[in-house]
Amino acid sequence: MSSGRGTATTTRRTALLGAAGLIGLTACQRSEPSSSPTSVAPAGGGAGPAGTTPPPSTTSTPPPLPQLPRGGRTILPAHRLFGYCGSPASPALGRLGIGDLDERVEEMLTRSTPYAYGRPVLPVLELIATLVHPVPGADGKFRSWVADSVVDTYLAAARRHRALLVLNIQPGRARFIDELRHWERYLVQPDVGVALDPEWAVQPGQVPGRVFGSTTGQALDVCAAYLSGLVAEHRLPEKLMIYHQLHLSIVRNEAALKQHPGVALVKSIDGIGRRDWKIKAYDNIRAQTPASVHSGFKLFYEEDERYGPLMTPAEVMALSPQPEYVLFE
Image: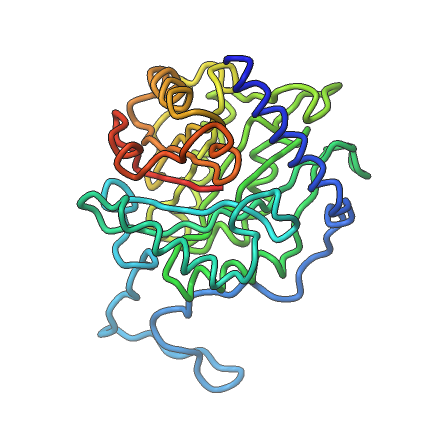
């Protein structure tokens, strides 16, 4: 990474951690929710009279399988994914947390059109749900969770606009798999996926923001296997699992990440800076990526423009391989 890119990344990380520190860590002590998240109405008829169970029917047809927000059960390569990332905690955390949520999603839908390139666009709301902190908090994990009410709000918005909700995980010293289990009540929904951000995954004795975090292909594979199990158990459509990568050292032994039934794996290649920096990072990181992992590409509205014009849709889609997920923060 060049010194220019290093400066841009350091500035971004400082801003994110500063914004995170404003939120507080009390959410880590979340009590059990009193109700389930907004859910798709179950198919196949309701209950009988109070206190009774309807008799089995030998002529009834099986209930229909849950569908993706815009139909079907396969995410990739059936669609082009286009998303915004952020959190209502602070504008510094990304575009999705700025202003009125429905207005922001409408803006996202308009911006997505030039990226379709022959595929129907499936919109993505990537909400930072597990948020890293520069201080340990009561459990020493250097992260907190947004309130369930925030996730419910974003899930409702995603459903109004027929989009996927993706829960972005910045784990601090927590394990990715434990964070997925924390959010399981949402991940069993047919329109909720997950994004893992290993830049913020640090080891005991390390502090987020002082070092680059990292993960392994084995840790990612555990998460993919877990999601595959949820898909099978709940008869869900394909589940989206994204992982973000800024430079080569952030994911070690990536070959240990295998394809699992019902899970669409996407690597979002990040990096702030000039067009040539971003293209070089994309080429270098993609070269080590398993063939089963689809390509993603991330742009930063404000940070990238400090180094020159924002890449155009044509420039982004000229990358090889062509990104299947384009994300703005």
